[in-house]
Length: 198
Image (tube, rainbow, N blue to C red; front, side, top):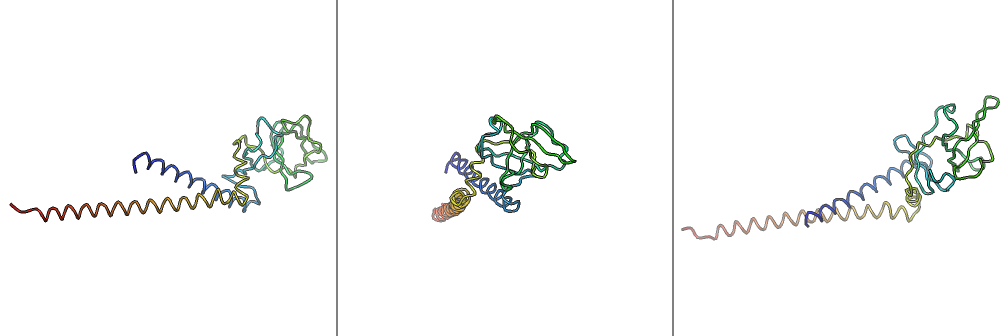
């Protein structure tokens, strides 16, 4: 195999290994954190609607961080909160107004792409995290797909099989190369012993 071929082979192996490691991290992290992957203290979420476009595109992966002090949230901050109708559904919208009544804080939110604010105020107890201005377009589609059965096969099992097969091929090449060198050495020794002494 020429130098360029070795370089390409090495690159493919490294990319497949990286994909496998990332998928394992996301899968394990999702199981530990109730379906939300966690990476270096950031929760990784997939954006499923266009309500925050153009700042946050549909299908993007975003990084959010849990909010320790709700008093630190201000108008203009983008927060992730539990939907009033379905606590399992998370919404990421911008704060347009902060309200306080009877010592309780609530937030009026609005999607940047929406014409009007959300109908129901968001109680502080529903706030999950604050958006950290980290958004990777389209990667959310891949992460969502990787959680399906076909996605698991395509993103984890197939790269794993390809890695194992490529490493077996590399081992076979190394042994073949060693065998060829051994045969060449033996031929040289045979030739040397067969030459007449003058």
